[in-house]
Image (cartoon, rainbow, N blue to C red):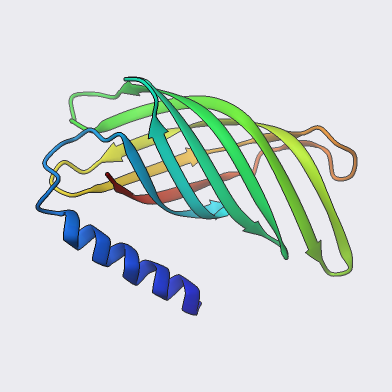
Amino acid sequence: MRKLFITAAVMFTLMQAGFAQSESSEYKTAAGLRLGYPFGATIKHFASDHGAVEGILGFWYGGFNITGLYEYHQPLGSEPGLQWFFGGGVEFTSWNHAGYSGGVFGLDGIIGLDYKIKTAPVNLSADWKPAFILTSGPGGFYAGGGGLSVRYTF
């Protein structure tokens, strides 16, 4: 809880420092926090007008999750900065919880909404991120992934 508070305070300070700099509904790179599965850090970078790569480093039952995604973005409606996106990628998840430990590889899909606030260096995103686990153990389709992200844009 203490780490979450410190991280939130640092993000708030960075956002306050950037308010005067940002008057655009577009961004190139953004980094911040992801709430959901996986919970952790997220960074998104646009490699082209519509294509972005996103990396997620999350924490999971005494282990970690690392995910790499490619996302295709399109404007949604007439609101500047509002986009919908879809894409896919790969993940590795490890855990060490209640006497059980292991790791799995999977293929992920993602679909969601992305919004860059015009008057602030802030990007908000909501997504659903299902996965298909390829390795042995708790394999198969996992539909419970998804989250909310708050990022500082630069």
